[in-house]
Length: 222
Image (tube, rainbow, N blue to C red; front, side, top):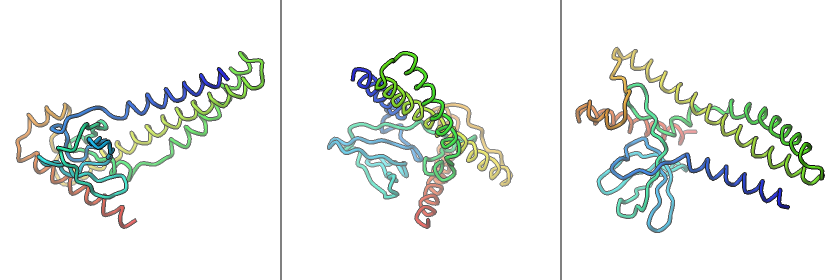
C-alpha cells in the first residue's frame, strides 16, 4: 500500500507541475487579441478562451465551445495567459488557428512507442527491486501510466510546434506573394510597440480580428 500511495502522489505531482507550466500570470493592460487566457472572476467562475477584442472596460472572449463571452474588467480577479505566439512579422497566432492545422501524428507515435517502453522499463525495475507480485504490478502500472502520459505530452508539444511552423510558413509565402516582406519581429511585444507607430499596430489588430472571425466561421460550417 505504501508503494501504491507513493506512485499515486508522484503521478499527481507531475500532472500538477505540467498544468502549472501552461499559464503565466498577466495583467489586464498586457492582454491583446489572439491571446489565450484563463480568467478567474471574483465569483470563482473560470473562463478560458481566445481574446477577440480588448476594451477599456471589458474583454471579448471566444470560448472553447465557440461561444462569445464579454467579461467586464471589474469582475476579474486574476488573469493567466498562455505564452503568446507570433509569426515572423510580429502578428499573433491564435490557439484556434493552431488547432485548425494541428495533427496528432507525433502524439500517437510517441504514445504507442513511449507506452511500450515505459511499461517495459517499469516492469523491469519492479522485478529488480520488488519480490512481491503486488509490488511488481503496482510499479509496472504506475510507471507505465506516468511514462506514457509524459511521452504523449511530448508528442502533443511536437505536433503544436509543427503546426506553428506551418502557419508561419504559410503567412510568409502569402506575404511574399503580395510583394512585401514586412517587418521581421525579433524582440518582445514591448519592443515591437516601440518600433512601430500606432497606425501600423491598428492595421495588425484588424488583420488578427479578421483571421479569428474566419476561423470561427469555418468551425461553424463544419
